[in-house]
Length: 113
Length: 116
Image (cartoon, rainbow over all chains, first blue to last red; front, side, top):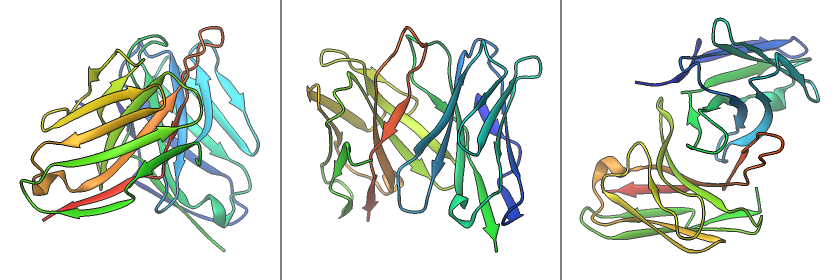
């Protein structure tokens, strides 16, 4: 079965709104998580990552929150722009030196003007 | 990411043909990966290699083989292509950072393969 998944396959927001994309993971041994953005016709692009010893990490307009108690990961995008329209994937790594990433199915974010 | 290149970008082939997809990287990373992407199924790992002498099967390795010719090159072969191997294929690289505990993967632009 899939270890990493997303709550909603699609999310539609208005330009300027804040977006929240959610992800649930099932393996409590996972210690490293990454969010990727994939635009149409392109490969996934790294957005932000977080280690399991952190609850929150901020980047430019993006924040990742990790709740290990309920095994939940979220990506917050502030002041969403049309250029943020893409598919967003969360991914987990069971341990830093071992296996490769496990990806969720993705959430398609649509931003309207 | 221009540091990870894939050739060809598009390929149409027939059932039973042998196909090779190539990946090259200039990032100097030891780790390389091959994924396929199907609509609604996200990215699934086919094979991965943590260094030139290391090859590991991923989630869906049946019908595929790989070769790690050098640190910078990792090729994926379909021995006898079948229609359900029609998909988007991505190569990725990463460089494990033990101090930071990170292993971020960087992806190529993808190869769209159609098997008729």
